[in-house]
Structures are given as C-alpha cells and as structure tokens.
Amino acid sequence: MNLVRIVLVLTCSAFLLSFSYAQNTGAVDPGLSITHPPVSCSTCAGAIWANEANANAQDNNYTEVDLEPYLFCFQSTCYRSRYLYCSDFGFSVPANAQIQGIKVKTRAKCDQASSGIDSTVKLAINYFPVGANRASTAYWSTNASFTTYGDNVDMWSYNWTPADINDPSFGVFIKVYNSTGANIKMSIDHVTITVYYSLTTGGEFSQTASPNTLQANYSPGEDLIRVSGTTREASAELMVTNIVGQLVFSSSLASAGEISQAVSTAGLPEGIYFVSLAASDKLITRKVIVAR
Image (cartoon, rainbow, N blue to C red; front, side):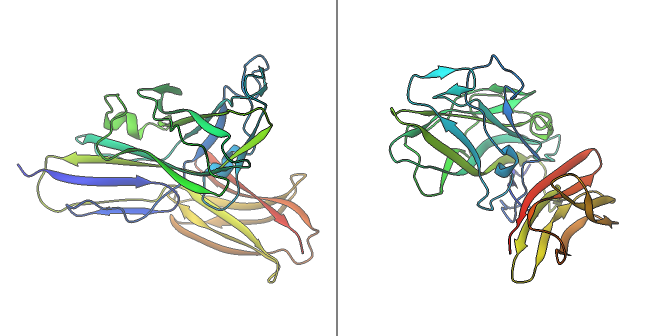
C-alpha cells in the first residue's frame, strides 16, 4: 500500500486539503475561547482572562490577563493566570487516519520585557488538559510575536485518535505567570492548531471544510462595518446589535461559504456594537467600536 501523508490546518479562515501530498492552504478559527476554571469560580486561584474570544482571530484584538507580582496569589488576584481554553476548531479527520503530530501556534505579547513566561501549554480533550506540557522558558516579547509548540511528529505524549481531534472539546490550555515584582499584562491575539496525519490508501482524494469564522472592523472613512468570514451552515443569520442589545441590522445567509457584508453605520451613534453570526447551535460574536 502507498502511504499518503496529509497536513490538516485549523487556524483563522477557510482551508482546503486536496490530493495525495502534504497541504497547508488556508486556516480557520477556534470556535470557542474561555477562562477555565470559569470566572464564576470565586474560590479558584488564578487571574482571569478578559475578552477571551479575541484569541479566535488574528486581528490585533487581544485577550488579556493582568498579573500581580511574583508569588502574590489569592483567588482571582494572582501572579499566575487561569487557563485560557481554546476549542471547537471543527476538525474533520478521517476515521481511518493515523495522527502523526500536532502543532500549536500563538501570537502574543507582554507589556514589560523579561517578565511574562509560559506556565502551561497543554492539549485538551473532554475539557481537561492531557499529555506533555510544551510551555516555553523564553520570556514573551513586548511586540506581538509568534511562538510554536510541537511539530509534525510531536504527539505531546498522548495517543490521539481521529475521534479525539474531531471532538469539539479538543483544543489547547494556556496558563502564564509573572516572574517579577511588578504588575504586568500578558496578551494573546491568536491561537491556532495544525494536525498532521496519514492515510494508508492510495490514489487521489480531496477534503474540503469551511468552519464558521467571523471578522468585523469599522471603516471610519466609509462609515461602514465591514464583515467577512465563512460559514459551513446552509442557513445562518448575520446580526448587528448595539450595546443594549437592540438589533440595528440583520441578514439571512441562505448558503454555506464566504461571508462579505458592508453594514452602513450612517445615522448610528458612536459606541460599541456587536456583530454576530448565528448558525446551527453556535453563536460567534465580534465587538466593533464605531468612532468617527
């Protein structure tokens, strides 16, 4: 039998995987990023991440955590963070695949040099971290920089199956800490995962997937909110609401594929608006600030 090697990438836009060669031709977002243990756990130690969904797209909107001086830790006020848990990537690895390796990539920064460090970077399944800790010992840069954990032959000391990878709970846990005596802020713009696998079948084949993604930005010169992304659902709803929840725009999307929409903000007051994509049982939301 011929051994066919495939690279499946899930990061921040649509991806296409085709033929019998290694491919990396696009990307999609994680569908969910949250603080774990959740904010509601009032007795859990660890600083809480803010605006966690900002880790779902590379757009210079950051999820951030404020860390106290080294060794100061009491519940939500702490020099260590709680986990940032990114999941719901929408993988679709064939059931007969053999997982070869997994790579995690982040884009992040710290507001002070030689201060913020990884504490834990672990893959997750069933909402719990498993396998090896791939945390780096390098300080985070003060400029937004990419860091890679794992590679195409790194299994993270866990026996991954296609069912594990395709499970919505599959993702990555990230915990950070402050090694100094000053208050610092650590920020993550984007988290992606690449899964490498092989099939023991010959011939040509293809696999296409378009997980739901959403990006929204205000264009002051045009007085528009420009919305882009993809949806894998045949029926979805695009909505814009103001900060008190009033609907100011809606559009029904009748087919899966690329999203491109310009929403006029003429006549709308300055302030915070929320752009949402409702598809199936999922809701993806982006915050947009209209400031003329």
